[in-house]
Image (cartoon, rainbow, N blue to C red; front, side, top):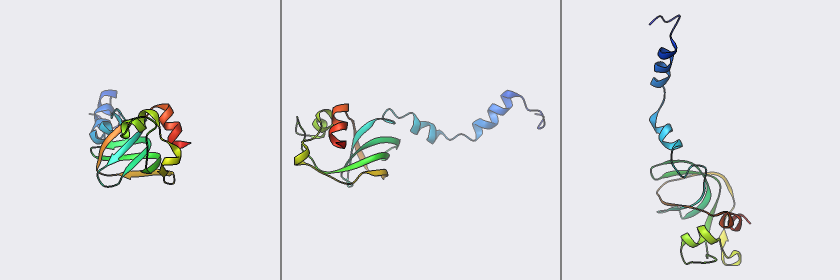
Length: 120
């Protein structure tokens, strides 16, 4: 290889040496960009938009903690994710611009109705 005049193929090989597979895997997670309910082992329940996922570690944007909740239909978080909440029967905390959660055991995509209900 001539360092002063590299070929396109050589430049691609050099660039590949600096890529990290961890970043590529995170960006390919099917929940990235979706508004979800995230249930954690010890940090409670949060709703927000997924920025990244790394195993049980999740970063959410514009999230709220659901301190207590009651689904409009259903009895579990699946009902909240599909149908939203009964506003006067729930306690939601302050919105966070970003939160890093560990020990996430469940990510449930929300319907648009549920998202509006949680953020309303």
